[in-house]
Image 1: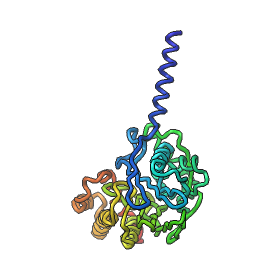
Image 2: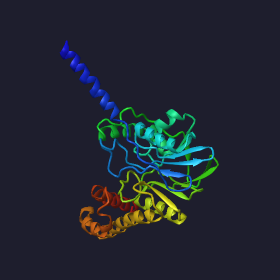
Image 3: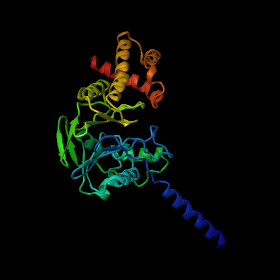
Image 4: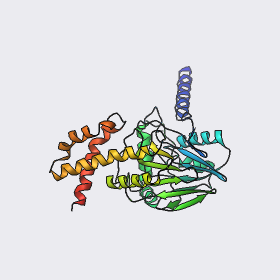
Amino acid sequence: MKHLVTLFTLFVFSHAGFAADRTVPDYPAEKISNHTWVIHGPRELPNPGNKGFMNNPAFILTPEGVVVIDPGSSVHVGEMVLRQIEKVTRAPVIAVFDSHIHGDHWLGNQAIKAKYPNARIYGHKKMIEMVDQGEGDNWVDLMQRMTEGTTEGTKVVKPDATVANKQTLNIGGHQFSIIHLGPAHTSTDIMVHYQQDDVLFTGDNAGNERILRIDHGSFKGNINTLQAGIDLQPKHVVPGHGKTGGVEILKNYQTYLTTIYKEVKKGYDQDLSDFEMKPKIHAALKAFHAWPGYEDELGKHISETYLEIESADF
């Protein structure tokens, strides 16, 4: 009997500890402009240590409530974001923007909707279509695997309102303009320009000292999307990953993508394979060698660009 009690006690405490371990520690919200705060996440991939948190959730205080941009990768990250908001204001969350389909940016919707069921969640219609086709569930499963279960309890809560290119929304008395020129980082991306503070939220169209994968997107489209952001000359730029800065973030990431595209096009015209091109392209990208994600993504980026150029050639 004593042995059974001991086993039961160990079971209860081990499971209680595991459940408690899912709580994402507080990351500070940094005020970057008059009405805007950003919670800068780690730059590494989702893992048990960061509990899947790796993006840059942001929130904006309008006269009528809070607008959240990309509330993170799990219900637990979303709850952490809400805790940081409550340190600044007790105003309700009235709206959320999801920048694209990758779940590390939007699975925190669940926490927002649980506390503020009337909040509208905005996303591109192609994102909603992909969620309906099962991509949201795929991301829930992926996060669970990569974090060894620390995102458990997360459920898909998709956007319930669509946005489109050049659309400007008045939310809480402030204006938010949408940029979507077609496939870029993915086929679902939006960039959000918050006009009152002149802040551009890029989603994963740009990383700051972080190289990002491109899934079912377009290198040429990503380059053009970044140019649209550069043309705005925003005062503040919040990348999908990495620290907030200015327009140099857009220019630096565009340089990375443009260098790959131009060098692959040269190699393609010389009838080289993607493998044969890689050493020269690697040398041309010296400024990016130390960026997290570079080693993982370069080969894939060269191959994907090759296929894009080949497709355009037919």
